[in-house]
Image (tube, rainbow, N blue to C red; front, side):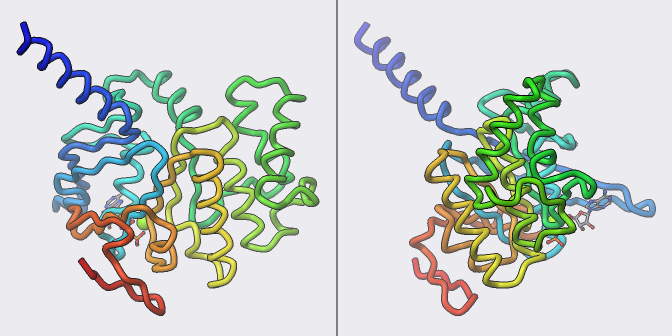
Length: 260
Ligand SMILES: Nc1ncnc2c1ncn2[C@@H]1O[C@H](COP(=O)(O)OP(=O)(O)OP(=O)(O)O)[C@@H](O)[C@H]1O
Ligand SMILES: [Mg+2]
């Protein structure tokens, strides 16, 4: 009996631990066929993220960062392995359920902002809420609040062409938060920005992580991003080489050095 209870307690502790994992990728493989050859973009990736963490995925060009994002974001399916979002195996979802998950659980930020050029900042941020079925007036109010949060309260009626790159990326960040996602996936969000603007965007991502409690996962080449991250996953040739806590690396003049 005593042992039974211990097992039950163990199970409860395991469940509690799993419940804090907002993303879990298990042995994920993705291959592409290219000119008759098989290209292994992801080669058995194991990777998990705790709720509320800020994690960066660092790795050279072609190492598989965007491919991994596509898997975590439910934009593409692995050839093998499993991806769990909030402990739901996304392979078990039908196309409607997957669309719901993408719309409500995940916010996306891209290197090239991906805003609708003919629409105002307000309309860009409203769009995912309208898709999700929110009333126009409520969506407008929330979009204005989110644009205020990213420091664009004065520019809600500006269109992307009337904004700087940094301002456009702020609009994209506000849009990513539209449906209160559990996770924001940011694929090289500072790559098209100058150093100082990039730092402001990193500060903003850190702020939404800390103040709004949103889990942030970025793919990046930008060593400044490491300073903001709780953990860093180093990826090479489609595999996670190592995962480190922020305090295990020293960052100097844009270069990272392992100190533990
Ligand atoms: N749709 C596709 N068809 C064929 N090969 C692809 C496709 N998408 C990605 N790849 C290949 O998979 C590998 C991983 O690409 P991925 O875009 O994930 O790299 P990345 O780490 O994001 O690179 P970068 O830092 O340049 O954005 C690369 O060799 C790439 O050429
Ligand atoms: Mg990429």
